[in-house]
Each structure stands twice: as C-alpha cells, then as structure tokens.
Image 1: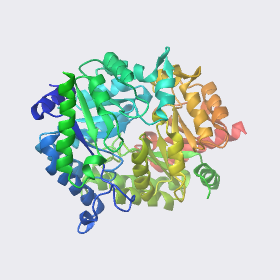
Image 2: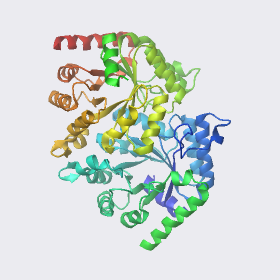
Image 3: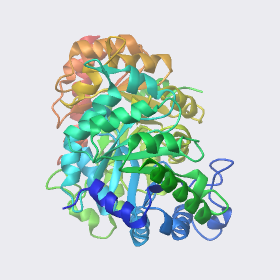
Image 4: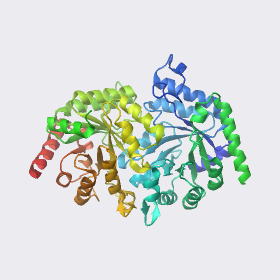
Length: 273
Length: 273
C-alpha cells in the first residue's frame, strides 16, 4: 500500500498545491485575538463551536490546498467522533489530514495513541523523537491501512531550539542531523522544519541530503510567523508542504488568502524549476 | 502560592505514601490483555466506560496512594468535562492529578494546551524538553492558580533512549544532565526518570544532584515493567513518586495491590532513613 509521502505527492500534484492550512481553533475567552468568532458559540458548546469553525474553513478553502493540520493543543477535548467528522470533511475536500500531535511516548502507550489516531481517520501525525523510538513507532504506524505517516520534529524555529537541536551533538554532529538520518534509516515519512528565525537555507539543504529526496518536509511558520517562503522552497526542493495557520483561518476572507498563498508558493516553485 | 512539588510533599506526608496509580484504560478491542472489563461497555459508550473504570479504580485505591497519573494515550478522546470529572474524583480521594501528556510545542500552542489543561483541573503534566522552551512553559504554567506543575522527561528507560538522552551531549555532558540542570535553572517542578533497563543508580543520583533536592522525581516502570524499586528509593532520596499502572489497575484486586505496593515502598523508605 502506498506510503504517506507518496500519497502526498499525488494529492499535491492533483491540486497543484503545496499549501497546508493549519487548524488552530482558539476560543474567544482563551486570548484577545486570533480566535473563532463568538457567533459559533451562540447555539453550540465549545467543542461543536470549534469543530464547526474548522468545517467552515475547510468548506471555504478546500479547493486551494492539499492538506489540513489540526493542532492538538487547540482541538483539546474533541471526542473521537468529532475528530472523525473533521477528518471526513478534510477527505471530502480532497485533502490529507495531519494531526499536529507531537507524539512522544514508549511501548504500549505509543500503540494506544496510534490505535485511537487511526480510528479518527488521520493520515499522518507529527512525532517528537527525543525518546529514541522512531523506528518502533514507524513500524506500528505503517501497519495500519492506510499507513499512518510519521513526520518527525527535526529542527524547530523557536530561538530556544538551538540548545537541544543544534548545539547538542551525537558523534560530533548536531542532533537535528541525527534525527534527519533516523528519518531516512527508519523509513519515517518526513521532517518538520521551522521556516523562521535561526533556521538557515544551509540547514534545510543538509536535512534534505540526510533524510532523502522522497521525504515530506512539513514547514510551519509561514504567514503570521513571517517565515521566508522563498528560502524554504529554494532549499527544500520537491516534497514540501508549507503550513499557514492564523494568517488564513483568522483573516477576513480565508478563501481569498488561501488562493493568494497557494499562488505565491506555486510561483516560487515555478521560478525554481 | 505553594508550588507543585511542595504540594506533593504535603499530600505524600499526609497519606504516608509515595505511590502514584497510573490510569491507562485500554479498550478490550484495542489489545488482547490488560484492558478494562467488557462489563463497562454494556450500557455506556467507550468514553464513559473508560471514565467509569478509572473512577472505580480511584474509589478502590484512594486511601493508599497520593497521586494518579492518567495517560493521554489511553484517555484519548475524553471531553474536557470527562477530564474534569476524573480530576475531581482524584481530588476527592485526597490525591493529586498528573496528566501524562508529554507536552512539546511552541509559543501560542503551549499557551493553548495549558489553558485547556488548567480548566480540566490537572495539578501537573509531563513535558518533553526537546524544543528547548522549558522556561517559557514553566513561566506560563506557574501563572495559573494553583500553579500547574511541569515535570520534564529527563531519562527514560526504553533501550532506544540511550541515543538521544545519554549519547547525545551538550558541552560534553549527556543530554539528560543538561535537562536536569534546566529543571533546576528554570524552576520546573520535577523530572520523569525511568526505573528499569539501562538507567543506573548513579544516573539517578547525578540527576538528583543537578536538578536539586526539592524537585519531584516521577518514576514510572515499577510493577509490570519490573523496575527495581529499591534502587530508585536508595538513589533518589526524598521527593519521589513511584508510578504503578497495569500491575494495580488490571489486577484482580486493585485495592489489595495498592496496599501492597504502598507498604513495600514505605518499608524501603524506612530502611533508607
């Protein structure tokens, strides 16, 4: 059965898009800006309100992106049925569903997480490799039909990431390079790579060489976080998926913004090819 | 306001216990053994069945332990109301609630996770420090009332952990030591330390010296995973919380097992003092 990165290529080509829309539904009482509209809460509980907000975004943007990335920290408290409603809507929009879950656990707990995640219909998840068990996780995830893609946090863009991901070394090499090599060695599906701040074009190229051309690079940090999309597209080459969250979902016109970002990314891709 | 480690000391002294009961409610269709009884599913959906199983365990064991640790990978799909029912039962049993969540995220996503976790009534969570932002997480978590305790994964017992936690170095020191120092430097509340396999008494002593006497050591891996409780108690000294999961919750008599483990740990503590 086709693996996640290969499925991604098909979806991306079919829709002529490398855009992923990040679904981060924050409640109005949670923070002062970038929240779902209060209208969603007029006749629904907070779970339904957040879910319907996401469904509305999918309806408005589904033609111009190839994946959605619900963020675990924002869909906190969703039931499995609600997750399934979300992934069904994503699939009906002809897109892939990636749960930004940052799974890190061991043994039977990994198995339990994947059991539930599979039942919710997610095509892939993000994974935190600190516990060293990427291989065991990939093996279990790939046994599901369709296989659950495992996308490992490789180099994040927050300034404090330098300490543990770059200054830390294994056999003289930065940790993020060891992670990229594990992604290749253990047949994981991709890498999460920050696009802003300290992450350089050279870093992205290095990860591409170590992880392999066939791996999907999931790149958050474009849009509100002002990452440099040109840098990313130039350095990462093929098989990239650029996530835009707040700048689309909390804009006045999500459909228009999605079209704009998709167009920008495609123009930058064409300029590279 | 009293921090989590200090609150823990009070609970532990009050109940004369360093035992934490791990709540890992697996469904019968999820695996072949160590699952909740099918009777829970006769008249309830899978969320309610798992929740009621946990409430029954708390009712049977509450007098002989000082904390419960629900595991995110097993309570997958619980609503926030269900989480709150769980933490309320834990508090009514005179115990602390630690969500084994292994949080790893950045910026606004960390804030969102802590917002929801606080509303669910958890006293502390586990945290994965790979992204380097322990300080920012602790600062936000400690602003809640009561402060949410942050217990950082420091050295796990799975064999693959060696690569990223021990062989990886920062300034010539193993990563787990750098994490222990960050726990102290950033005023986090404790460390998660595996009790089995490759983790030695010397490792545990080293973490104690670097992290500080006042930090809580949460020690999973006793019971089914056959950790060496004597080694742990000897090396870690005061402020430890030993988690036993499957060996209690899936035994024929959880109350009896809880009394037994509690007695064993207390005898070992007395032998050390």
